[in-house]
Length: 624
Image (cartoon, rainbow, N blue to C red):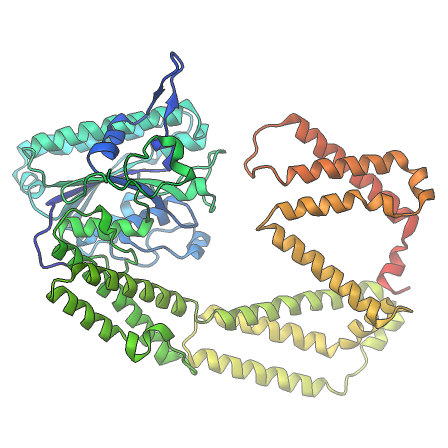
C-alpha cells in the first residue's frame, strides 16, 4: 500500500456479464432515419468527456468465474479448474473485497458468494442476491439488472434509519460491486445481435446513470467516488463463450471519477481496425489486461494489492502526482516480486538439479539491485525513469513466475508422450496378437522370452528411480500415475516385441526399406498437416484441392467407367475447399449444407468403389 493519501474514498465496480466491447462502443443504424445512435449514451459521454476507456483483454477460459477472479483478485485461475466445475473456492485467495474496509455486492448467486466466503472477515463482505430460479432464459433477463440496481438504491434508503450502515457508507476504502447478469443471459438465449441483448445494454446504461445520480446526492457530490465499468468475458455470435475467439476475449473497460484521468484528446492513439467504426478516434484508447483492473482499484482507494495479483497498474488511467504514480507502481512491482521469490525458493528447495531464472539471477539484474535503483530514482525525483524500471521488473518477474510454473513441463511432456506412444504401440500389439494371428502363431508368440527376467528387473528399477525422484521433489500424486503407465506399457511391448517385428516384416514383404521409410514419412506428414490445420484452417483447403486432382491421376480405363462419380468427386472437393476458408462462426446457409451433403455421398461412393475393387483387407494387415 502506498503511504500517500488515495484520491478516492470509495469505489463502485460495475460488471456487465457477457458484454462484448464492440457491442457497447459501436454505433447503430436508426431505422426511422439515416442517422446513427448509441445504445449506451451515458457511458459514451464518459468515454468522450470524463474518463479513460479501452479494451480489457481476457484469457481462456472465457467464463464468469475466472473472469471475475481476474478482475477482483488480479490473477488468472488455472484452466484445469474447469474440470472441477469451477467449484467455489477450492483454494482460498485474496481479493480487493478482502482488502477493503467493507464491500457491498449485488447480483447473481453464481458469483457473489465466492468473494464473500473467501474473505478473512466474514462480516466484511455483504451480499444481496436473487434466487437461482430468477435466472430464467425464457424471459427478458434485463429484469435481473433492474433488480440489482433497485437493491443498490434500497441499501442507501435503508441507511437513513440505520446509523451503523450510514457510518459504514461514509467510511473510506469501501467498495460497491454490481454484478449485471442480464446481458449474459440474454446473449445465451437470443444471441449478441438480438434486440433483447442490445436493449439490455440500454438498461445497464440507464441504471449506471441513476446510480451515479444517487451517489452524488448521498455524498454531497464530494468528488471522492471512483467508478469502473467492465465485463468478465464477451459473447460469440452464436451466443456462447469459453474459448479464445476475439469476440469472447475483448471486453470494455471504462473508468472515471476520483483519481481517473480525463480523455486524452491531444494524442488519440491506440486505435486499430477493431475500433475504427466506433467514431471514438478523437480520444485515446487505453487497452489493458483483465488482471490489471485489480491493482487499479486498489490504488484508487488506497488498500493493499491482493497478494496473488499479477496485474500491472495501468498508469495512463491514473490522475495523480508523479510521486503517487511512481510509488504506486513500485508497490505493485514489489508485490509481484514477492510472488517470484516464493516460487524461486519453493523450486530451489525441492528440485534435484535446480536451474534459476537467468534474467533475475545475475549481479546486474538481481531483484535487490532493481529495488535499490528504483528507490534511488524516486528519492531523486526521477519518477518517469522509476516507473519505466518498475515496468521492466514487473515484466521480468512475470516471466520468472511463468518459468517456475512451467518448470516441470519438459519432464511431464516427456513422460506423458512416452505413455501415449506406449499405449498406441501396446494397442497395436494387442490387436495384432488377438485378431491377426492364427492359434498356432499365437502359441509361438507366447513362447518364453530369455530376456523376460531382465526386462522385468529394468522396469522395476526404472519405476523405483522415477518414484524416488518424484518423492524427493515433493511432486503431486498425479505425477506418480504419469510414471506408472509408460513403464507398464513399454515393459509389455518389449516383452512381446516379436509381434510387432513379425508384422513389420510381413507388411514390408517385397518392398524395400526405402519404400517403408517413405510410407512412414508420408503418414507422419499427413498427421502433421492435420495438426497444423487446427491453427490454420486454410491448410485443409489446399488438401481438398489436391484431392480434387486424384481421379485424374489413375488409369484412364477406370476413370472412363466411373466418369460421373469422379466428376462429382472433383466438384465436391472444390466446393469443400471453400468451406474451410469461411469464418468459423457461420450462419444458416442451405446451399452450403447441400454441397457438404453431396460431398459426403461422393466420398462414400468412391471409398466403397476403392475398397471393393482394389484392396484385399487381409493383405493390408499382412497375415492370413
